[in-house]
Length: 367
Image (cartoon, rainbow, N blue to C red; front, top):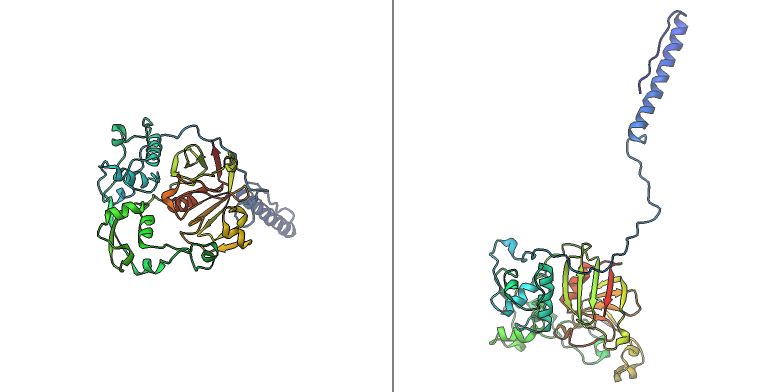
């Protein structure tokens, strides 16, 4: 702001003094006004207005189809290794698993879960959805060698092993519900069926392994999550769970077990309310009326965490009492057995899903 002031000296020294004083006062006022107009506050910082309430995210409809994307880069491609097409079904399963498209426990055979994983990949890649390892899929599905790796059994691995009690009371008294055998540990860490691990290591005596022993196993690691899940869909008829980002791109596809009784399958929309890694488990005899031990106990028990905990290594609670998505001590049975009401995943899939979702994530259960 610019202002012009005239100073008259006709009135003598007194008038000159008061005129000068007026000029200084006016200049001070003008300077303060200019500072406020420029910065909005005396210290030069912008003023912030706190929102009265956090914004509420609008619900999104379930995606009618997956947005086709180019196949995601194999997790090993960043190392500069050459990608190639899989040579057999074992390599197909490893290639799918490295993209968080789980074919079930890797076993080198073509079963319903591998076909479901192929369909998920074909939708993701914009291919005809056949569920077969056909020519079009061979041209898009790739992986980086090595497919198998030598995994060393360490002293720390062996120190984890402990027998698993057959009774609920015995389980509640254990320090942890950890792996029972090195075979179980290697199979789970490799996303593989124990029978495949035995087949790959015919000369190994699993009951008497020493620290430093190396065993052959699939080399599988899920990619770091590239986005948070905005939606989880559970398809009851297919016994499959899929996670999508906000643009409906597929983030993960997993086989899952569902409730044995139809009335225990909550079709509709749910929300994630809690995410618990390495949870303990409260055994309630009322939930297991078929358990003679539970009827005799007549009280609840708290079981310690571990991969052989009834809910595995992760619990994702839903906004319906008693319902959640969780792991399992028997990953090779996922999708082939039925639960008391929750949605059961292999431990490695439950652990990965827990990284994708947040409290409030939508979970839509479809027939």
